[in-house]
Image (cartoon, rainbow, N blue to C red):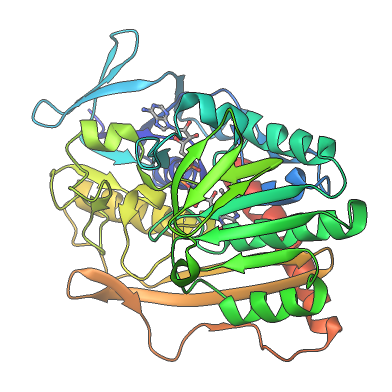
Length: 392
Ligand code: FAD
C-alpha cells in the first residue's frame, strides 16, 4: 500500500504541508479540530475596526478538493511505536510519518490570576476568533479618557512583532476615536523585534497615547485581578478599563502528548527534515517547533511546511533530503498606510536554523512616507497571497 502521512493541525503550517504532500502523490489525512480556520495575521486590524473578522476566516473545501482526506476532530493521542493517532471519538489513524503543526497553547498557569475567568475579562486575543471580537468590543465600549493596559511576554512566543503592532494600532484607535485615553504597554523584556522602527514611529505619531514600560522599568506582569481589573508588576499596580494580557506560551498540547516537546514546552527538530529530535517518525513545524533563529510566524510555518513535506516525500522514497534554505518576512502596520518589515534567510548550522549572514534586512529607520505606504501595500498583498496559496 502507498505510504500514509497524517497531519495534525490545519493552520498555516499544517494546511501547507498537507497540500504539498498531496501534490507529491502521498496519501494524506489532515486532522483539524475546527471547520473554519481563523487567521491571526491582520487580526490586530480587526481589533481596532480596520478589517472585519470575516476577512480572517478560511474554509477547507478547496484544500479537500486536492484529494486529501480531511477529518474534523480533535487528535487526543499519539502512539509513536505503533504509529497511530487517536481522535477524541476513539478512532485511530495509522501513519508511516506524522506531521504536527498544532500551533500554541497559552500557559494560563504562568501569570498568577490569569486563569479561564481572566481570559474572558482580559482577553489575550492571541488565538484569533471570539477573543479578537471581544477585545474589539471592549475597546469600542471604553470610555473616553480610559486606560488600556497591554502586556507582552518574554521570548519565545508566537509573532515577535505582534504585541508592538497591536500597541501601535490601539494607539491609532485612541488618537482618532478617544484622544484623551492612554495605552500602557508592559513588556517582560527590554528589547524586541523592529524596536527602533516602532519606537521612532511611536514618538512621532503617538506621544500622547502610548507609554512603553520595558522590563528594566518594571514591565513584567506579576499578577492580575480580573474582578478589579488590576494588573500588577514588580514596581506598580495599574487600574485598567481594558486589559489585554498576552501570556507565555508553549507548543499545542498534542506535541507534548506525542512526546515531542522538551522541558521548555517547545519541540526540538532536525533543521533539514523537521523530524523531532525526541520521537522518530514525527515531524514538527510552525510555532510548535524550536526553529533556531526563525521567528514563530505564519510566513515561517508556510516555508517550513514546504521543506518538511519534501523531506517526508524523500524519506518515504528512501532518498536523502537536501539541505534547505528558508525565508521569512514579517510585516507590521504602525498605522493605516504605514508599514514596516523585517526579512531573514535561514539555513541549518550545527543542528539549528541560523541566519544566513548578509541576507535579509529591515526597513530603513529614516524613510519617506511613500516607503511606509508602499510597505503597507506589500503587507496586504502578502496576506492575500499566502492565504490564497494555503487555503485557496
Ligand atoms: P496555527 O496557525 O495556530 O494552526 C494550528 C491549528 O492546529 C489550529 O487550527 C488548531 O485548531 C489545530 N489543532 C491544534 N491542536 C489540535 C489537535 N490536537 N487536533 C486537531 N487540531 C488541532 N505571522 C505572520 O507571518 N505575519 C503576520 O503578520 C502575523 N501577525 C500575527 C498577529 C497576531 C496578533 C498573532 C497572534 C499572530 C500573528 N502571526 C503572524 C503569527 C501566525 O499567526 C502564527 O505564527 C501561525 O498561525 C503559526 O502557524 P501554525 O500552523 O504553527 O499554527
